[in-house]
Image (cartoon, rainbow, N blue to C red; front, side, top):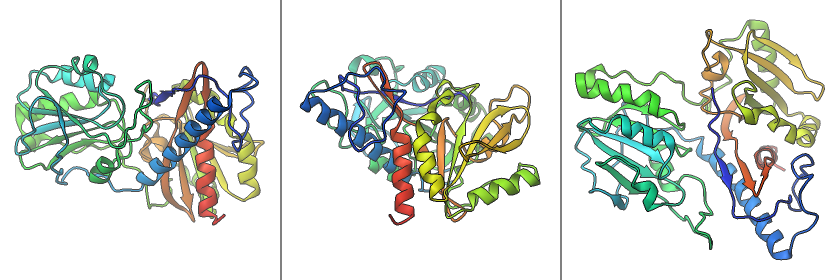
Length: 374
């Protein structure tokens, strides 16, 4: 599965890890030796905010999302383009920024279909130029909240609005739905991009054949409040994995170095924290997708490494990884007493040529400290 990780470009001019954070040696070796006090404060605040937003995303991942058979709520957000939606019409709905490629390609492919089309901007800046890229007939709503802008019109908050997240149970910015005239969800593509490929055939079937021909999305949902899904693994490998994940607190990282460029080095940023977690008896599992066989081994740093096999030749959706509902890599899940309690999708911040990757692991550490009552 190709990673669709969102890389944020910040308003910061210089790149130094602030005091109180674990020092990121490899990322900052070329960083300036000093910052002005004002810029240092600005940078510290931005990195701290990014970590807090990851923790908020983790908390939102615990919610049960609206899926097929549920009734979609009437959303009364301000209209940016078009007219107020008629919620008693069959409708296609997408969530995202004002011009994500998935969204634009999707609407281009269904622009001639006689069905109401609604795009909800859930985060980020809004540009008239980008809004103009949407095909005629797409209604665009503004669901952003508390999206305070800095002097360069860069939004400080980059998480999906809490109100929209609470209404739909989603925790990422990209989702899509097909509704009938009674707002019943016939098909839901949740918390991930790529619906420009999956949704057009669904909408085509609905328009040409009718709602009775629509099959629910078969992609698994996150295993929140469930034990780890290990049934696809051979018994000996599954038992070893279960023992690691049944510790009082455990982490499972999902990665794919073949399909995801970010996966090649991202976990190196956690070396110091991994040693801290191992000293606290935290279970740590690394799943490496895209392999030829299921194998399991203990790495020198104490991490239990699982190789995940492709379900079939050429399939980018690996069997074990898919069973967890993983929708983008790298990503991580936290477990407590053998139960999955939340997901932390990966985030980077790029500030003038240097990428900060440490917030992901700092957020995990803060969550672990909370679970351990520290």
